[in-house]
Image 1 (cartoon, rainbow, N blue to C red):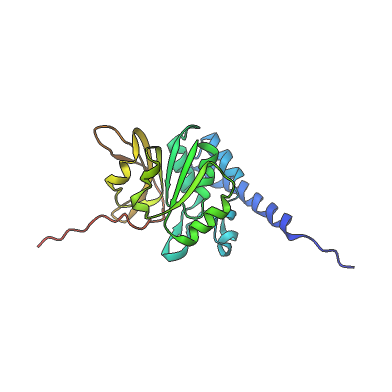
Image 2 (cartoon, one colour; image 1 turned 120 degrees about the horizontal axis):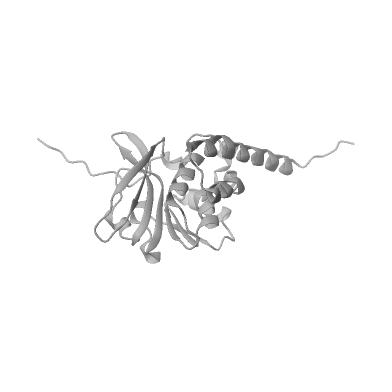
Length: 226
């Protein structure tokens, strides 16, 4: 008689070990030092929010390929963004570039409510499936650069990717005094940056150079001179 072993608990245990190794070696050593963020990232199974063919790579410190030429940020990128954001328990958050919903799941543990915006249909399906039953998160589909004005204003805007510029219409969805965290592209180099919207305007300050996935729809218009 051959003993049949259910592979599911073994697989779950393997992913759990990789998740805790990620926290110890990637996050704690790289200024992800907000205890709430660290706890959330130790709890949320990132593999559940990725396409099946990439789940084995869930905890690698690298960008992962997604459909349509998109890429998924490394765990360190979202860890640094959320640490710098100082997310409050009553924050109403707009997440731009939700992909399969991993960052939204983390924000659900940190904030009061989350609107998770994604434009790629297959990623929306993954996010909605993985986040089913999570009443703090609303997954919506639409152009990333348009935001989601029907649920504005937001206390916090998190752009989980790198952009050349943030449209004024997107910044306008943030409350005066609200915070903005994003990746930026500057002459081919990607960085993480933070800012705060005020009545007088808006600006970003870089806080870390890091490889960051570019999001579609945020290119700066090119001008030509003769």
